[in-house]
Image 1 (cartoon, one colour):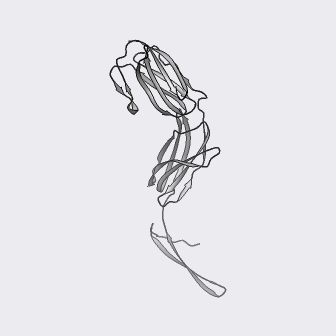
Image 2 (spheres, helix red, strand yellow):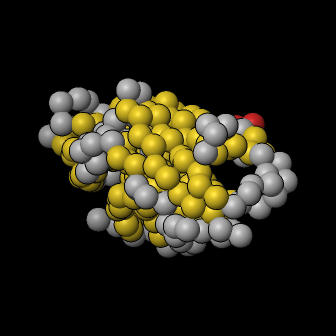
Image 3 (cartoon, one colour):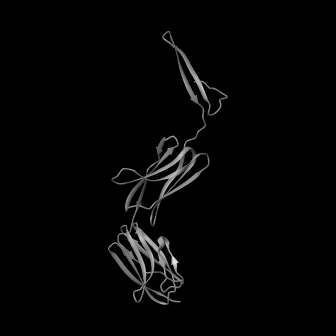
Length: 237
């Protein structure tokens, strides 16, 4: 063993080892670079379930040439598959926090891991996380709350499987007065607020809501695949 002092970082040094064995001399040249690079140091990686999926969170203490993280997932009987990519922070010695939301979950156990990829293409895997998502066992539409209401009320429903969902409000004559939801939803629990304020309103996805509601009885109807359920609510000015 030998020690060389006064080296300069990130500079190439040529070294020649010379020796003698059995009366024969030999020499081997080497080139080395002295660097203070630090690896991507993952300090935490965890998963937490929410109403509509699983949120992954992880942190790094240091990073070197970190292109980013390929987020991978598998179920019990499948290989890991990529479900998204999160950009890294290059080279840094500052702590960084990352998040990724997986909304395409299924009921049961799922497994996650990170594939950290360097700018030069080198990669390594994190530990594997196990998470379990429990979805509702059946479709259901709950009674709005509060009821009676003024000026707003919340409508909650549950989906056992993914489906195209419509949630509409009708007056006592059967006229449609509002479309609160009109899109595909994954399994889980959901809620939406119904506002009684006047004036036409535009919801996400170009859905329009007519204002100027009168006091009285209204009905809200949920359709999800073959599931249809209707409940009554009362608006009091």
